[in-house]
Image (cartoon, rainbow, N blue to C red):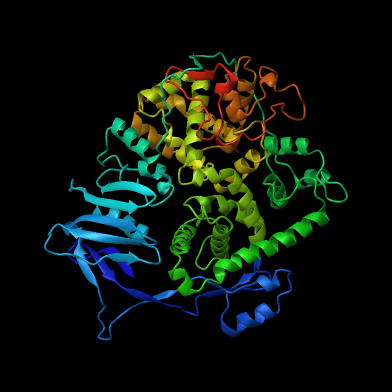
Length: 612
């Protein structure tokens, strides 16, 4: 069905409902020429030409090559007299509430202010209910109308009430997405818009991410550390990117990588030249073992190719009838198609209509749903895949590198958002150690929760830096140096650069959110990395480092207080093995507004629930 708000001639906003049926347009088909897993080999064709192309394919993936339908045309479903059955239109101003129910698929119940009239339920068998509500939100917000349109969501896994109102925070904090439109986007709004009091918004955000209570009361077994002298921050320098020649020097005649610790250190200090990334990223992400030979990697790629296309075939072979009975697959597909069409479209690799890069982006994300159907697809995952596909230029390699990256990022996208909660608490703990004065200022402005860093953490600064800077930052972080959770020190580096302006201008809650949001595409990645490395060395030199900080950064206690620059090749910060996820009986560190909480016994030490 097609259901969307629209405006009539006299500017009245209407909700119009017209049932439609699918009709495939054969002209909108994309097929693979030669190797279907390579973006460079795609060609647009139709009919007999596509058949002949497939028959001439020579790659070892030939048996898996398939024609990909990339778009469909819709036509209105009529009863023979040209009029749609069950069609109706109603003014948005006549609506009292919208009730959303999820029972296998989503359907909406529209309630009118005039109780004498009723409307049929709107069933979204093929997804689209979220798009409809987004459109309704945009047209329902009138600058002269202070009234609310109440949206009630009945979902077995969620319990949310949304009021569409002139409020930049409320309007996008819905409960439809597992990660509700990046939450950070909810903070956007113009100066003319009515804004809630900061303390009310802080309460609202706490409801969106339940359990994120940074300012806990002091617990038994913890001592409060109000201030620590970290000493001066050491000056560090960056080096040029690792060249293709240097990369080759670290391989033996059979293709094994040599001096891996030194190689990782060189990548951490300067990143990689682009010519090396396609190969090096496979090692950094764990797709290729560092000690594998060239022949072993070829065998691995063949096996992984077969495994990938078997999973791809699972969703490609689902019939239309089957998909009608699989609401989760429909929802995944709908969300992926929407996100793919707006991911990095200004990048030449993804720009334009009928771009083969977009087809591969879509197919990899759909196949990932088969690989991890419990998680499926969540908004933001397309942002993590896009740079990987850009570098790999190969469907299979990009998929398995993406799988490895998602192993690190998985908790960010889980429905309970445990990874995001933990990271925000850890970031607050680090910031309080580094600059208690600045942290206290943020706390006084109801910003101690650091929600303005949410998007930074969720998709690893993908929306904050230029595309090329994202490539540099990610490959540096993937080395695992100089410590665990280095991305949190990257956050501290950015905040350290902005704290003076925030405090001197006496920014309040709304101004802080606006200022952080406007940093997007204005940050210098080399400057950020240089300062973040300096912060890591400054922390490491601390002789009496709190246990909570050691746990967050994965530092061995016996190394704390040593000189992190004594070694010429590689920093001596040795990350601990990844910690176990806490269960219901595990004690975790908490913190107070007075400073850091430090465990006084091993039993009450900090347990890290998220690491990368």
